[in-house]
Amino acid sequence: MKHWYEELFENYGVQYDMEVFTQGTVGECDFLEQEIEFNRTLKILDIGCGTGRHSIDLTKRGYNVTGIDLSDSQLEKAKEKAAMQKLNIQFQKQDARNLPFSEEFDVAIMICEAAFPLMETDEMNHEILVNAGRSLKPGGKLIFTTLNGLFPLFHSVKEFLAQASGTGNAVYDQNSFDLMTFRDHNITEVVDDYGNRKQLECNERYYAPSEITWLLKTAGFSKIEIFGAKLGAFNRNDKLTTEDFEMLVIAEK
Image (cartoon, rainbow, N blue to C red; front, side, top):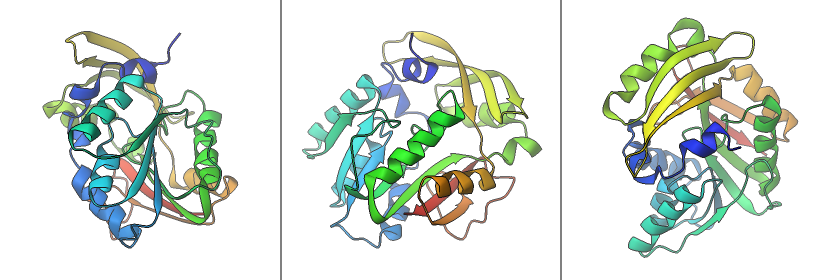
C-alpha cells in the first residue's frame, strides 16, 4: 500500500509546476547562489527534487547538480524538462531515508519541504537529516525549508492553506492540528495531469526551532541557523516569527 505522499505525486508533474508554492524558484536559487558564494565547483544534491525546478535553474547557472526523488512520475517530468533545455542533469530515484552517498557533495538542498517533513514518523524524518549529513563532505552545508511549529500555535493552518491554494490546484480540508504530536491532519484534494481527482488523508509534521536544532546536532551538524522563509525571497535578515508558515534552515557539518 502506498503512502499518501507517494500517491499525491503520481501523475502530478504538470499540475505541480502550476501550484502557487512552486512559483518562487528563481528567487530561491538567487539566495542559494549567494549562500554558496557563487562557487560553481561545488557539487549540489537536491533532495526531493520533484520536477527538478531548483536542479534545472541551478544547472542553467553553471552548477553541478544531482536531483533525487522517490516519485517516478516527478522524475520523468524533471528529465523531460531538462532534455527540452539540453541540460545534462543526473536525476535518480532514491529514498531520502536511505541514500547511497558518503561525503560526495558540498551542498544539499531540500526546498519546499521536499522529503522532509512528510514522513509518517519522527524517526523517518530524522533519518532524512542523518542521510543528508552523511552525503555531505566535512564542512558541507544543508539548506532546507520546513513547516514552522510556532505558526499553528497562533494561527489557523486551515485558513492559511485556503488562502494559499486560491490560485493553485490543491485544496485542503478538515484540518486538525494535534498539539501532542505537532502534526496537521487533513484531506488534500488534487486533480492529476490526466484530470483524475484524488482525495488523500495527509499529515505533515510541524517543527519548533529548538527541535530542528537538536535533530541537526544529533545528525552531525554543528553551526545551525534558522530564519523566516518567504516564498521566492529567502533572506538572512528575516528573523523567524510566529507569522512565518515556513522556516529556512542553514546547517553546516
